[in-house]
Length: 391
Ligand SMILES: [Zn+2]
Image (tube, protein in one colour):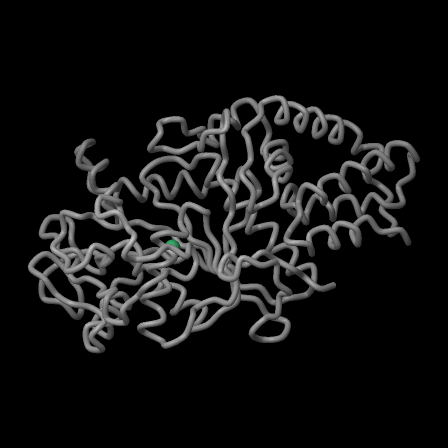
């Protein structure tokens, strides 16, 4: 089965060709844990979990890497407001995060790197950038020099550097950098900074550098798929590309896949807008399976409206399915006719989960109608592919 996926880098739906036959390396930008996760985070996690399932089903050796940002301005600000140590705060949210994913039957990624585990590698990487002229030191930190190659246009967003509004939040403009598009690699910080094996003054890494370093050390200089939310394209992924190309001379990933945003009444759900919907709150009223059924109704790279009526429908469907399971669970026999093949075909078209979900609904309808056991195993496989059941 050939797989096609929309590559943000080219704007085209492209045939997937792995760097190494039979293997796929995926790096997804994870969460900054200074709060519980919201529905948008789960949309991203689920989207890339379905991709992992797809590749595994196609017998690929998959390495899914999803990082955790445990050093960040927002973590520090929240910890200060609560009178807590930032690392204690972030550790408590990481524990909550893992408990929640477990409850949702969503497995851990193959590698889950944390920034604090990579501080030496980050320091070495920054030193390499200084040595090659791509980074410079000021009195408050170390910055990436975007002007060294006369950067004109960003490769993913196609934004033109000179068109950037000087007031846009490219990075914190209070910092002492040479050009508006430059960004912090290492911020000096006497209070919450870390000692590094390279720099004399303690500090902490900027946001973008952590991902360049972590995918370099987990997947190598070049890997297959880089993913994340659409809101990370600029500046985060653009700056990751600048750093990685400066350091390694090659584009880190061939395919850049971006999941769409969750909306309510057409407006993006986000913490900054104060309209976040927390996953733990939804789970007070709905099962994890219903929530994941609902999320699969939207294709990964499209925006999806948070519709309570659709969530209700998903819950009714799930409850009915569970009620009927005892009728079918004792006699699994493989069928000639495979809904699984149909689902794989749907997912091979840019991970079209809405189409895949319809196939699952059809299969369950068929199962109820025939009262036969013969394709029950296939149906469980459909739930597994869409990351709704794990077994
Ligand atoms: Zn990232």
